[in-house]
Image (cartoon, rainbow, N blue to C red):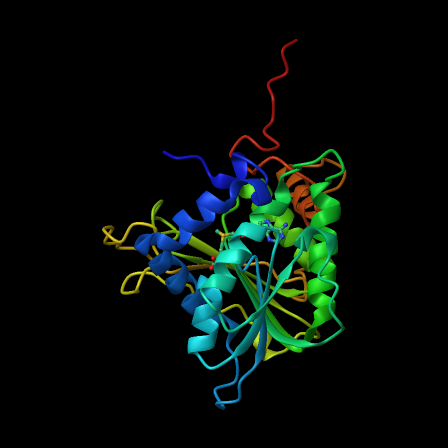
Length: 291
Ligand SMILES: C[S@@+](CC[C@H](N)C(=O)[O-])C[C@H]1O[C@@H](n2cnc3c(N)ncnc32)[C@H](O)[C@@H]1O
């Protein structure tokens, strides 16, 4: 299986001129980007009133994802760290304005200016430290903080991501929640390795109906798949992590610090953005006393 690109090189190096051309000349990639962007736009749940919205495409690359936004009648601008990808977008004469920028340094936009944001397969890059000056936690903090500020209250950001593991997903989601977002993760085709797609669906502002996490896709869906050959028989699964949801009062036996306490403590650490081992059947197991 090919390695994820983010494990191979920093994005501005990986997406060089030759990769940028290869990327946009592949009909498979064009198709995938279009499907993922359609789904992200659907999850944005913009009002169905025919009014064009101003949207941001984070990691817009060659503008394939932005094209979906244009086709749906919206205005957009995009930012990307790869000059080569943006050059291809310019050549393709995409409708959106383009910025050469590193999302890990913050978006630098005015407060409340955008009506929504999408990102396709880009945000997981922030989890890598590509330079000695890079600290993933600081970069995630700067990114989510600035994204939160730049969105209009009640607006959504839908970020399709490829986290490497549970810890990375928790890390990304943890920083989104710390920035003030409500929402969670929608997982389409959760049981399929090929078709599984994760979307962070984040709502800015006070909890409201719009903060409810939408349904994931399963059984009868048009899959946003890397491999269109897979016919899935999946159950729809939605996993939600909502900082505004009132916590159930748990009776925790702090004295004996049993499994419940350990699970609660680990969850608390994850919410703070710490890397915490996954919960397994061995978590907080009682060990035999040997003597
Ligand atoms: C899989 S490509 C998605 C391309 C895009 N959706 C399109 O339609 O072409 C991921 C993009 O994220 C960009 N990216 C990765 N890290 C970034 C960062 N720190 N800041 C801005 N863009 C970044 C890459 O340069 C790349 O263009």
